Image (cartoon, rainbow, N blue to C red; front, side):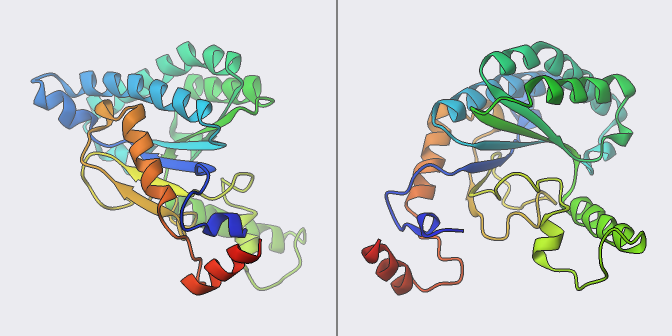
Length: 253
């Protein structure tokens, strides 16, 4: 964290934006269409937002595509989502690569089909050298899972003698989270009107600015994102400091 993060106004764009893309099903229902229609429309919204973030020089965009709780949805909807996920990867990986966008996945992949796991790995390998934008897809992801797997890694390494026995610190946990190589989110957005984080990046969102909008995800476009970013830029990020400390420090910079 630097004092650039603390600017009360006129700040740069957030380095990392994390989004819960909520409202696909309701968007379809409002149009008397099946929920699958809403999820397909949601993919189009993803393309717009990814392109816009790349244009705005955002470093990382994380999208919550499928939570560890989403397996509880009706079986036919889960099956449709898995098919759409695979089809989208097959059609988009080359486009991401051509646009210098790196693709990353976080989450427990073990429950996905072999074909989907293979395509995810291929997408990461093909785009790993790109640096215009890192697109992180959270798939079968949960914030509690992420913390538990980090703690388990630390304990296993200590038991095997690969880590000295020591107190577990924030730095040690950070090094074992699925997001260890990317900055924590500056701006969290949830579309669809709900105002909760739903087990998404619980550790990483500790000091993230929150933005909630009633706009359903398929309707969330470039202007919607610009409105959220403008809200972010007008906030004072104190990270435990007082407002006076921040202003005094900025005066001396």
